[in-house]
Image (cartoon, helix red, strand yellow):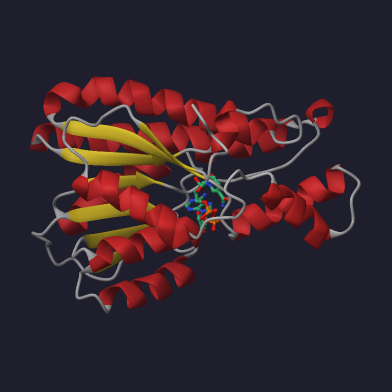
Length: 263
Ligand SMILES: NC(=O)c1ccc[n+]([C@@H]2O[C@H](COP(=O)([O-])OP(=O)(O)OC[C@H]3O[C@@H](n4cnc5c(N)ncnc54)[C@H](O)[C@@H]3O)[C@@H](O)[C@H]2O)c1
C-alpha cells in the first residue's frame, strides 16, 4: 500500500493491472484522469505500472493480492475502499489459462482456473457492487473471451471459465440495474501477452507441432481481419464502457475480436 491519502476524484480498480491488458487499461484510464488502484499478485510489476500511470497526474495505489484465495476478492475491495473511500469502476481482468487435452484434464488445473477466472470475478463484483449500490452508481467491466463460445477441446477449462464470466456479467447487471450500477464485458481477440504466449506454447505441444512461428502465423491467419490486436486497442474498449457508454448499456458484451466472435 503506497499511502492512506483519501481520494475524491473517480477511482478505478483494475485486477491484474501489472501486465498485459490490465496494464494497458490502467494507462488508458490514467490518461483520462481516473485515479487508480492496481491489484495484482505481482507487486513489483504493479509498482512499475503505477510509476508510468502517475506521469498522467493521477493518484495510484497498488494492492498486492492473490485473487485465487477465498478471501482475496473481498479483502481487495475492502482495502481499496480503506485507501480511496470510493470506487467508481471495477475491471475484472486477471485470469489464468491452461491448455490440456480434454481426455487428460486435471482437477488441479480446473481448480486454479475456477478460483481466479470465476470465483474471484463473482465475489469481487459482489463486494464492489454492495458499495456501488449504496453509492447509486458504478461501472463494472469483466474481461471475457471469444473462447467462451467456441468448441476448444484442448482449452476447455479456460473457455468454460469465460462462459461463466458471461453468466456473471448478465446476473450482476440485473442484480444492480435498479441501483445505478452497470455491468458489461469486453471480449478481446488475440493479444500478444504472457497469458497468450503460455497458452499457444502449450497448444503447440499438445497438437504435436514444433515450429512456433509457423503455428502462430496459421492462428493469426484464421482471424477474419488477418491480424492480432494490441492491448492498447482493447483497453480503449474497456475505457469506453467505463466512461463513455450510455447509462442504458448494461448486461452487454463488446466483442473486439477482429471477427473471431460473430454473435
Ligand atoms: N491475451 C489474449 O489474447 C486474450 C484474449 C482474450 C481474453 N483475454 C483475457 O484478457 C485478460 C487479461 O489477460 P492478459 O492476456 O493481459 O494476461 P497477462 O498474463 O498479461 O496478465 C494477467 C495479469 O493477472 C495477474 N494475476 C495472475 N494471477 C493473479 C492472482 N492470483 N491474483 C491477482 N493477480 C493475478 C498477473 O500478475 C498479470 O498482471 C484475461 O481475463 C484474459 O483471459 C486475453
